[in-house]
Image 1 (tube, rainbow, N blue to C red):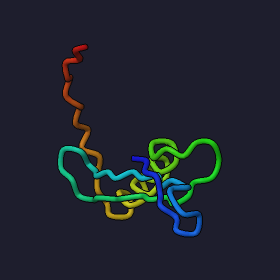
Image 2 (cartoon, rainbow, N blue to C red):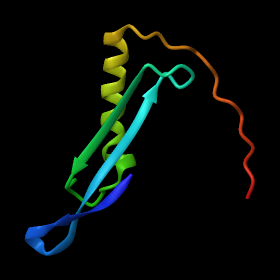
Image 3 (cartoon, rainbow, N blue to C red):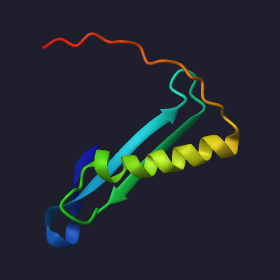
Length: 82
């Protein structure tokens, strides 16, 4: 997610907070991790591009450290309609 951040020193909304929250494994959740980046720098300030890569690295490490084995479950096929 991406949110405007209120900063009192500038008198309004002048910054962003980028976030990503996820759990794993998807079919039998063992861990939940949230990544929040206040004031991401650069042109790209979205949670999916700033926080999600951090989530992926932290979750991969945590799953290995906790000995949580991959389930190998296939994601269900979902119909796409427009």
